[in-house]
Image (cartoon, rainbow, N blue to C red; front, top):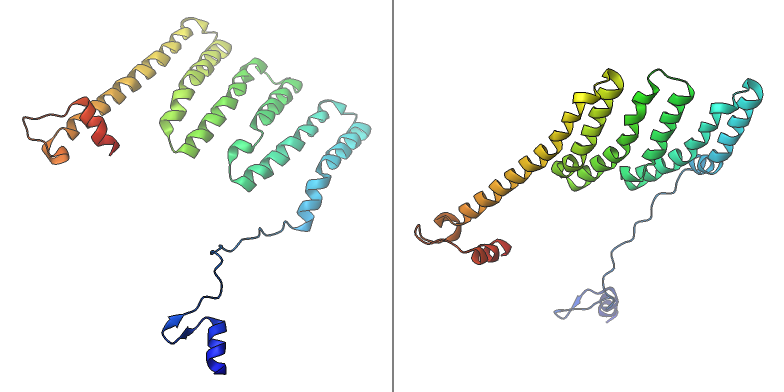
Length: 222
């Protein structure tokens, strides 16, 4: 008797039936994220203060208040980098801050051909286009946005380095050529798919019969 009672409590089979321990719906186990090490938490908290201390010390002892103030750009760079690593998404990184910091530093250091570094500012949209293409696994998406930007960069380089503002402007003809070529390829692929669906081995139609546009769209959706 006691054995059957304990079997009933534990949910074991009793007289050909299976008892349930609980009627509550199944809940998947929750996973708790591993806590961040203490030294990392401390460093994340005091990092802005460390940058301020470094700026003051360098200014007092080396008299380099300028351009040492660029150290403060490390604060958004560091926190955005940690967020990008945590989320595994490069778009969270403050890439524009990095580009502007490099651009200003080159100007402060009076690097030769300073104007030549203007194209590096255009790397900002290029960075996000590449990240978006990688995330969506679509290279054409990146090229659609990169071609105009690359043409502008090429034109600036030709003008600033070689003084070829003319006939360097001809490079902009690459923009309509690219989009017209892509449009032609897409149209060809669409017509090819429509022709393949019209074949007997794909659609079940005879060689004489062909599908209408409405029938093709209905079959494609199904």
